[in-house]
Length: 337
Image (cartoon, rainbow, N blue to C red; front, side):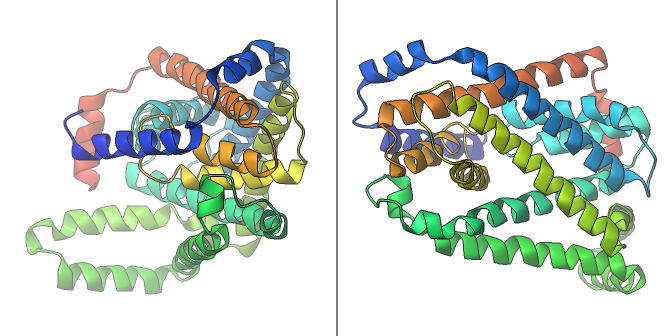
C-alpha cells in the first residue's frame, strides 16, 4: 500500500475503466446482468480448468531435466500461482509458485523461475499469434470503439512480437549452447559485478541456466509451443461458452482476438486482479463488433469474474493446506540471489 507502484497501478486501472464505461446507461447494464444465463459459466469454468491442468503438464514437462514431478503435484502449485497473480500486484504469483515448488519439491527457486519466464514468453508469442491471425478482421472494424479505435493494434503487435520473439531466441540460443552461455555469464559477472556479491550472483545465474534445459531440443521446444497453443485455445473456449449467456454472438476468431488483446494489455501495471486493463480492451473490442456497450460491459465483467474467482479460491484452498514458510523461503531466495 505504501509503494508508489501500487498507486500507479490503481490510477491506470481507474483511467481504463473511466474512458471505457463513460456514457454507459447503468439501467441497461443491470438488465444485462440480471437476464444473463449463468448456467453457461459451468462448462466455461470446466474447460478453463482443463486448460490449467494442461498448464500444469507443461510446467512438469519443462522441469523434467531438474526433477520429475507429476502433473497431479504440479496442479495445486499452478493454482497457487494464479491466486498470487490475482491478489498481488506485479504478477507476484510467479515468484510465489517458485517458492512453493522449492518448499514442496526442493527445486531451486532460480532454476524454476527460468522455466516460469520461458512459459510467459511462449504465452506472449501465442497471444501475438492470435492478434496477427486476426489483423485483417481487426482492420475492418469500426474506428469509434474507444480504446481499440485510438490505438494502433498493428504497431503494438509488431513491437510486442519483436520483444517476445527476441527474448525467446535469446533463451533458445542460451539453452542450445550452454558452455558458450556460461562463459559469457562468467565474463559479465567477473567484469561488471562487485567482488563482494560476485559468487552469489554467479551461483544464481548458473542455477537459472539449468532451468533452460528443456529448450535444448527443437522437438521439446516445439512441444512446449504446441501445448501453449492448446492452453490458450481452451481459454478462448471459455470466452465462447460465457458468450452464450449474453444476447450477442461473434465468431470464435473474434474471441481469439479479444483473448490476445486483453492478455497482452494485462502486462501493463494495474490494480491487483488486472482490474481495468482486462476489462477496457475487451469491452472496446466487442463494441467494435457492434455489440451494445451495456452488453459488452456485462459480458466482459462476468467473464473477468469467472476467470478470477474459481482459480483464486482453489489456489487459496491449496495454499492454506500447506502454507509457505515465508521466513525460510525468503532466506533461501536471498542465498540464491
